[in-house]
Image (cartoon, rainbow, N blue to C red; front, side, top):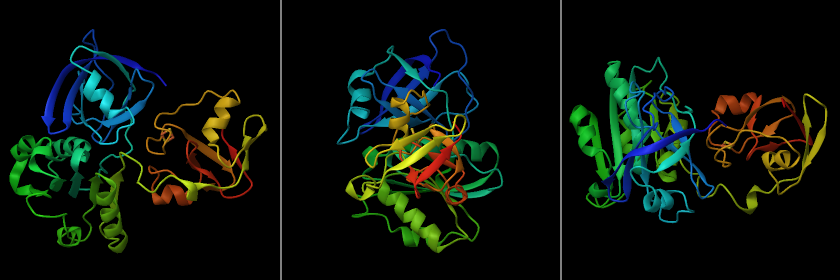
Length: 318
Ligand code: FES
């Protein structure tokens, strides 16, 4: 994957446990264009790769802005950003990718953002305002101190924004009553922690007229572990016919890398779509969080970092 070298041109505390970084090319040249909902990879010097949504105005090609929340049980990603990155630090990033775009025909939208999930939503709201779309936002945070970008949001149009702070409202948000007021046909765009995402997708399943569009920024808590074990299967390489055995405890990506293939990847958790491969034959067992239900049902592509085969073999377009 092509890497872009940038420097941290600005680093600031945004809210409790959240910092905002602005990234620019050292020579001041433009960065690749992006659309609201896009994210970039940060290639951290400790070897980790982490994805962060771009929050700034998509019309500004000179910089990228990201918000990073320090995760309580950080495995070295957000902790490294908070402890080691500072203004002037050089770092490698990827070009933007967008798995969470605004559909052009959605003229009225309802956004749900939980915590740092506000970052892609903030960029999308800018687009709604520029394109005169009708929007509302339900923004959830544990406390007002932890709610990033509140002042900026309120400056857009406070009448469109519903805030829920757990400590002030003495409990979690009642999604059922918040979403029940939605008119038919209004889509819900959501980014936030697992309970928020599950509440919104659950609501959308019960209300097909309010489809949900979601972006996971971490795998759901029950997404790994022993119940994910499955049998071995064979992967056939479409271009050569070579067959490679994938063991029950190995990913396709891991085994293909060991077999000499140089393949794109980023998160290795089924969330970024960078390892997507076309399926020529066989039925994938999808375990990712980026394909839509329709794409999963079609079965003609898969994320080889996490997904497997339902049958004995798969032929991949490699
Ligand atoms: S590497 Fe991110 S989805 Fe596979």
